[in-house]
Length: 426
Image (tube, rainbow, N blue to C red; front, side, top):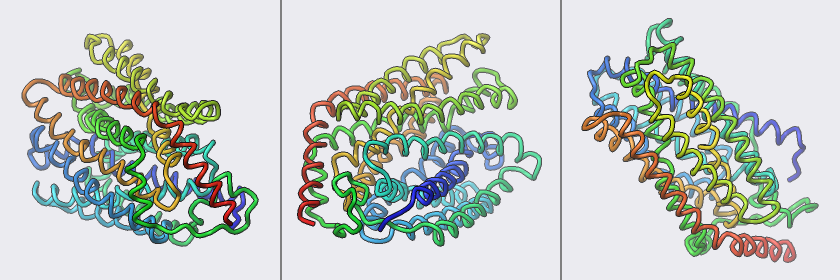
């Protein structure tokens, strides 16, 4: 199956919009902590439980989505995921009590597990040497979605009836995107974009198999990727769900000050995905360790500048903004490079499963992050919770990346040898 460059760009645009609007829906709840907590009378621990609920559901369903996406049409499954996103968000908007909202918000995690199918489908459109950059473009949508959600929550929601009205809007958009994916995106043969198959009009359809799944767990690189994933999402979830409350209650920012500070920071964060992905591809062309090296740089520098920001005196708003901007630039370096690394060492027919296992491990730890941070914040302060969880997690990530550096070279070569054998057999 041959695809034109223009159609490949169309695919990226559609999936970018899918991620942008989905992340807006998913992440804007952090900006609405105050009004939602007021509606249901929540404390920090209950607020953490609400956010942990969707993460737990997503964690449990990652292996299911991964298996389905390796067995069936990824495009159709992604359309289904978008439909579920729209439907569950509508349910959240009509919840009347805390238990109802806890359950309906947890149900929004069902579709969050579908991203590995999208990433593996995209991998079959683009060569390995440009995948980090492509994933950086897609993941650029995540912080932009966060920013859009912040604007909707802080500016639009008060004008149109509150947080429930915003959920009606984002839920409806999920249904629209579902239709676009269903009718506009076509699946690709697994492995189509591997360089060994360049020039081939047709390739063998590589099928999911349990022996191929077992091979995932024989790769030492993947074990270190799993370990860093477990630790690495803790800071993201703590910052996502508690940072706005921290700025408002402990640093004295009003809603306008929050928006004026975090708006530019989030834009810089988005740029970090593009920079990190581009640097990863650039260094990957020179050494198979390149993506891991860029990831190491990201976690170290992100941790240093977050620490300096949090330790800045309350009156030093300019200094706080500068350090947060620098932290935001480096924080996302790992994300596009980790996805590309998984696909650098795993066979095309089990890539959704491999990525799903990685995300399952991530969320198994990350699901605990909001509740853990809530408990620490309840006992101390939000500042202590954010700093303790984030710095500890990133220090562990650095150690795990060092471990991956020992194995990524030979295991990348092993995949290329396997693809070469398949191409010759064809």
